[in-house]
Amino acid sequence: MEKIIFYILALVMIVFAIASVTSKKMLRSVIYLLFVLCGIAGIYFLIDYNFLAAIQLTVYAGGIIVLIIFSVVLVHHIEMELEVAKRSKQILVGLACLVGLGVFLTTIYAHPFNVAGKSVTTTTEDIGLGLLSYETGGFILPFELISVLLLASMIGAIIIAKGKKLTNKNDIK
Amino acid sequence: MIAGISIYEILTVTSILFFIGVYGFITRKNLISILMSIELILNASVINFVVINKYLYPDMLQGVFFSIFIIAVAAAETALAVSIIINLYRQIASVEVKDTEIMKY
Image (tube, rainbow over all chains, first blue to last red; front, top):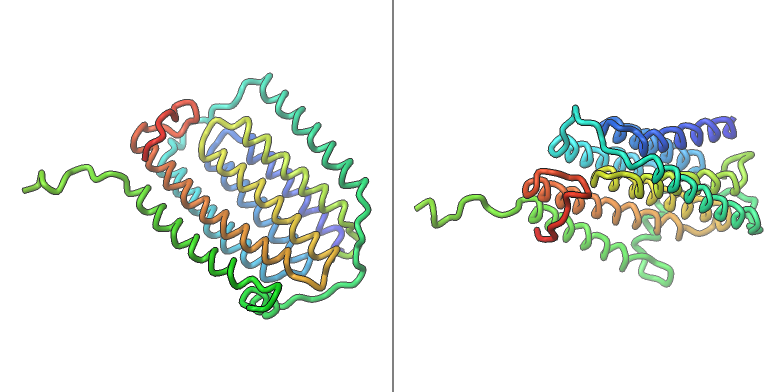
């Protein structure tokens, strides 16, 4: 049963990823990307990391996709078709990607992985305790760093997106 | 771990996703499309972290922590990129790569 679900998810993800990078309509390709992200969340559910699946759904499918849709709606003319690369360039890049994929897959299949047979259920509590632990192997410092990074990037995004003021304060007087 | 699915099959799927992202990154001519391709590449690598953690070291959680950090960095990166794109559109009224010549906010 899980095997069938995995194959369906993999097929959906690959088909929609290809549709997302080749579609000529901007908004449609964003929606195809949303399907890919939901498929990835499904894989997290399958390998029993519920917390990661929730993060994937809220941050990616909820946050990033909405941001991208906003920027598409603000910036792009919907009726316009996207400009695509030349045919020869497309084929060349596709061939290069296939060669790279072949190298990846031969390396992966030649490597013997020591798969641990047992399956441990991870609760959200374990993840939270690991993130906030001060002991060796704890992740408290990167956790705090990432929160400062998020704050700084949000302030930077606001300042950059605001741009220059169109009218000077002195002109109004 | 998923019953009946070996680690090789999942790694195959993520490699395919990664190279689809690379293909989109090179062939697209629009800044927002390029940003979406980057999201695909990041997601493929995040699945690799999580799957290797689950299959090879099920007692530890390092892969999960790193994937959380990658997701946070991706969110920050997307917010910054979207704000840069909007500012660029105000100045040159276009988000095509070929029109992007100025490097001043």
